[in-house]
Image (cartoon, rainbow, N blue to C red; front, side):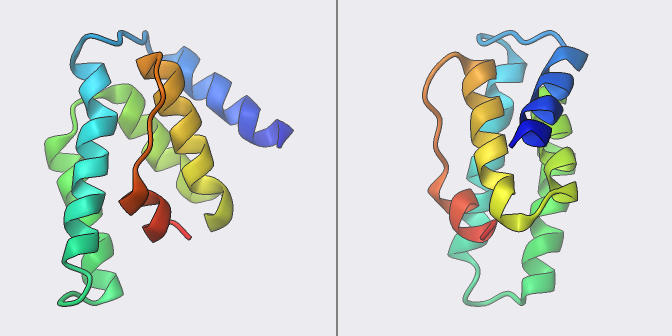
Length: 107
């Protein structure tokens, strides 16, 4: 748990966090991409879903904070990833944030 908190603090301190800017929309766009992928999971293989998520995040998300957090969590155990993204999003946005599709896909 300490390791996760340390990663979160380091990631969030790397960039200024502005809740009303493009930075704030990054986590919402990431959630939208995961939702699109989850809705396509019947017709796509696991590899295709992963490619879809990462390519769309690379091309559609401009928030450095959201991108940094998303990239960094893949060094952690799958069971820890969503909680760290959620915590970072809530810290950045200064409000509650949830993404059911991401939570489901990061299990």
